[in-house]
Length: 75
Image: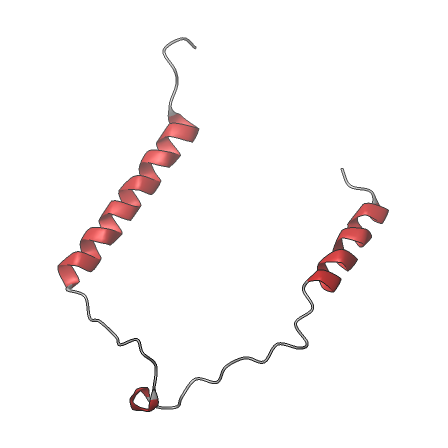
């Protein structure tokens, strides 16, 4: 499928292109009360969380059915 030369070249390119040695990660505060961000946590109702989860699972199920199980009438 892939030659060994292509595989090694891809791995080396991946390492060189994703060099993150100069990136400093932000530290998370130990306590939520220490956050000074402009964003605030917004608690969502449980019914909304459940509805979004059910809708997401339904869409995933429809996609799986369409691409894996659906047989066109012409076949």
